[in-house]
Image (cartoon, rainbow, N blue to C red; front, top):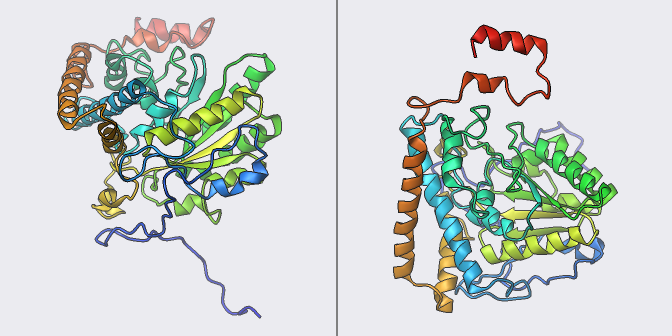
Length: 410
């Protein structure tokens, strides 16, 4: 019989605190190529175990193995490598710009580049992403101009959003990138609603919802799963598990479900976990989920197991809540290095060419930065017009806004 004594309140704790030795012994990593690739019309009940495994393609030797391999050519892989390297270099320059006072805020993608860069290549033109603030790779991989991204970060006179958004909260309908919301989890229900509308109108476009591990604790996440499951919405429900919210480890939001992917099982949604630092695996799983959505088979929930190597944002100091060397101990490695090694193993790349590419990309990013800064930065140069604050809000401007604009003299 259970002890009927005093009740005790349980608060989950991370394995290691600052000053301790990083420990990822609780992360079970299956052998690359060991997880099967089911047919897209599989009965979700028969693949429940995939919500607790990790789909991997690249092994420790840099080889692509197993049933999820073989979908990308060398040229496509080289493009993916370059996209990830570009995003990493872009990040470094913009983080530096924030420290120099040229923008008020920035958020890096360090260690997570494969998730968004590979995913974008699995979509078709017209598909819509509802991203969080750490999926700029969706834009980089789709050829969105870096200068335009920087203009938005600087909120200068060429900012396409006219200074109305927080830096890094991009928006581009043409590139399938819905406006980022600072209120976390709202994009999940928006993505499902957009996907439902696409199906109602007999369109061919699908949606992709994005959320971080911490935000899955929000009610919007669960509401989205109800509607996606009930109406078989053509949507990919992405959960980026980078181990840490701004200061709390993933166990707080995960609860007792074991994995974030397992959340989909109770809704009858196929749920997969994938190595988020494996470009080939991310692309293969995203392609599988996209094919399901286009075939009217409904949603798929995908958990990307990765690690946030940098700070949560330029306002965060991760050394206050995790060991400084923890990112170096992450067992799934660095996505850029892993894809580089794979291409070298295939004979399609070399260390010398990689070093050359790093220099070329840095030169390109610096040139874009100089062009953007010629339009102004946070404390210098051109700014959006005050008039822009009144424009593009209503189809017909209401009288009180017309009065305010006249008072402002714009």
